[in-house]
Amino acid sequence: MENKILVAVDGSKKGFETVSILGGFLREQSRVGIVLFHCVHQLAAREEDLCTNMYESCKLSLADQEKVGHEILNEAVKRLQAAGFPGERVEARLKTDSLDPALDIIAEAEQGNYETIAVGRRGRGNLETLLLGSVSGKVAHYAPKHTVWVVDTPVFENNKVLIAMEGAPDSLELVRYAADVLGPIPRLEYTFLHLMPSVPPTFWDDGHILSPDEEKDPRSRLEQWRTEWTTNVREFMSRGRLQLVEKGVPEDNIRTLILPTRQGVARDLLQAMEEDRFKLVFMGKKSLHERKPFLMGSHSNKILQAAKGIILCLVDF
Image (cartoon, rainbow, N blue to C red; front, side, top):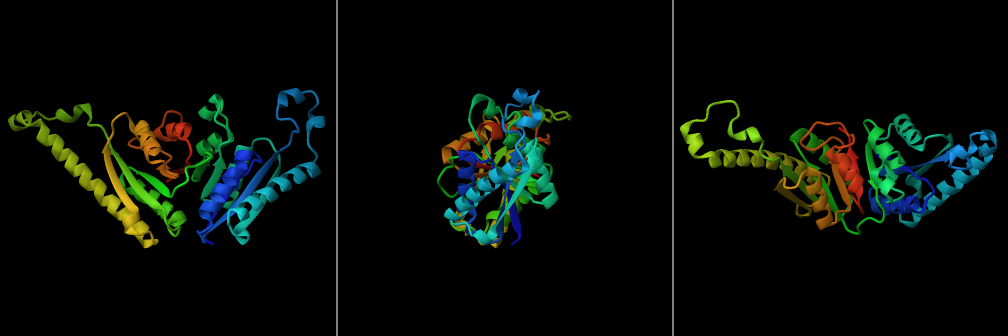
């Protein structure tokens, strides 16, 4: 077994739905195992401010924490097996006395050297949509060198996978990851999508004096730029296609799209995701077209906040 995915389980209805979805989706990938991880909060009441003056009385005993935790993990294992995921590829781990589940999930991922963490999104309320302080949001933001899958249940019932591609080095790493984790799964349909950046305002005067021919025919310069850019994108998309084919993906199951950016990178991606109803979306944690970290305001974070009904795979490279 080459890949193990750390799946955080919180005991909620949506959390168990996430487990079932991942189990059903990954059951045919024999090289992938699932490690279920549950953090038991040390307080019986989640509203810690109510326990300020009686902290000890609000703590769950270690025995009670273990009992609750094992019940949740056992139910999660049953959900995986019911979805067809083989029991021999499942492990379960428990963390008691947890103060911050997000930090404990990240610590477990680092200690176990997991490349991938999967978390469910518990709700779609106004505050939770912003992902400020939520477990899924914190894990996505602060898990360095880990790919994070955020599952927004229920997900679209299809086999469509979107890979949002930028430049050659990052795009090929994105495809490598997707090929390693998903390649042998049959029937998946892949779409490589690249959004061409808007033409910079300085395009017409990039530091040199325009020649008479350039002044007369600026459109030819624009067409030349588009042609060169498209040729470069098609080249690394071809290399990405080869990576998938080498993992057993039929060539007919791979399509490529090169589109101009219209409303903005994040909005255009969200529109494409809504129109085609992709089940999985792979993109880098850093902003497309910009080398910003994964923070508030980045394209990746905007997708995380707004995407619905998908498994969003944020790849760190």
